[in-house]
Image (cartoon, chains in turn cyan, green):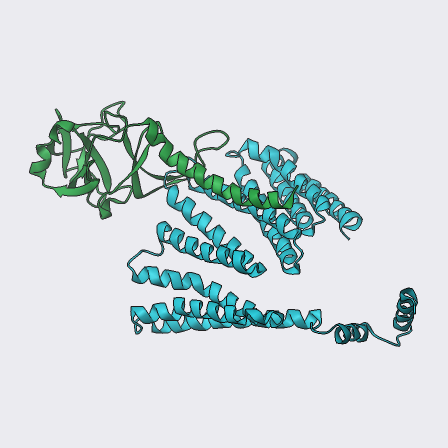
Length: 323
Length: 181
C-alpha cells in the first residue's frame, strides 16, 4: 500500500472523528517502542525538579534549626556531603537516561554545591560574605559545572555553568574594583549590560543546538538578556538634568536593533521586551523633556498615540514574521 | 553569525571586562610611585561645638593644644582647628594605624594640607557615575573604607581605626614628614 494512501486514510479518519490524535500517537509508540508521550515526559521532569527543590529546602531547614548543635564536620557533611552524594547517585543512574532520574540528582547536587562550599569555607575561617570568598566559591562551582558539561554534555550543566559563571563575574569584578573610575552606580549598570549581552549571545548559540532543552534555554536567555541589557542602558541614560546624552541618544537605536533581531532570529522575547522598553523610553523622554513645554495633558495624549503605534507595530511584526 | 562564534564572544565579553577592571586598578601603579608619607589623624569625639573645648592645631610643623573658639582663615576651605579625641598615626610602610599619645604626636614633624607632598590625599570610597565622558559625577560617599589616591589613578586602601570609619569622626591633621620615619 502506498504511503500517501495510508496517510490520506489516517487524515480521513481524524476528520470523521473515527480516530483521535492520541490513538495515532499511541500506535506509533507501541510500534516504535520506548519513549513515553511528550506531556508525560515533561510532567515527570517537572516533578523531579520540584522534588529536588524540596530536598534542598529540607536540608536548609535542617541546618537552620540545628546550626548550633551540629559540629563543623556535621555541617560540612550535611551540605557538601549531600551534594557529592547526589552527584555520585546521578552518575550511577546515567545508564537509565530515558527516566531522566540522573537529571534530578544532578540538579540536587548543583543547588546544594554553593551552600556546601560556603559552609566549608565558613568553618575554615573565611568571611563568606566578602567578595574574595564569593569569588572562590563561585569559581569552584563553575569549574565543577563546566567540567561536568564537558564530560556528560547535558543541557542542565550548561544552565548551571551560566548561573555560576554570572555569579563569578559579579564577585570577581566586585573584588577588583573598590575604587573603580566608574564608581558603584555606573559600574553596576555596565556589569548588568555585559551580562545581558552575553546571555543574548549564549541564547543564540543554544538556539542552534538539536536538543530541545537547549532551545528552551535559548528563549529564557533571550528574555533575561533583553531585560538586563535594555534596562541597564535605559538606566545609563539617566534623568534630566543629570542625563547622559550619549546613552539617551543611542537608546532608540538599541531598541530598534532588538526589534529587528526579533525578525532575524524569529524570537518573540526580542519583540516583546523591545516593545515594552520602547514604551518605557517614550514615557521617560516625554516626561523628561516635554512635560513643561507642551503641558502634561498634551504629553499624555502624545505618549498614548505613540504607544498605540508601538503596539500595532509589534502585532504586525509578530503576525508577519513570527507566527 | 556563526553560532560557535556567538558562544566565544558571549564568554569573551565578561572576561574582557574583568581584565579591563583589573587594568584600571593596577595599571596606574606602573606609572606612579607608591605613597611615601604616613599621616596623623584624629578619631574625634561626638560632634559638638568647638567653643570652649580643647582642640588641636598645627603650628610651625608641630601639634599643639589650644582652647577657644575656632577661627577660620579666609580663603582656606579647611579648618585649622581640630576637636580633641584620640590620635592615630598611620604608618605608610606597615599600612597600619596605631594610637599614640599627645606627647608622641607633639614630637612629630607635620606637613599640613589635604594633599601630601607627593600628591596623595585620603578620600572616602565614592559611589558615583564616573569622572570621564560620557559619564557624570554624582552619588554619595561611603566612608567605611578610605583610600590614598593621586591624580594619576593610583589607589591604595588605608586601614584606619574602626570608629573613625565615619565621615564626621575622621580628621586628617597632617602628613608625617619623612624625617621622622
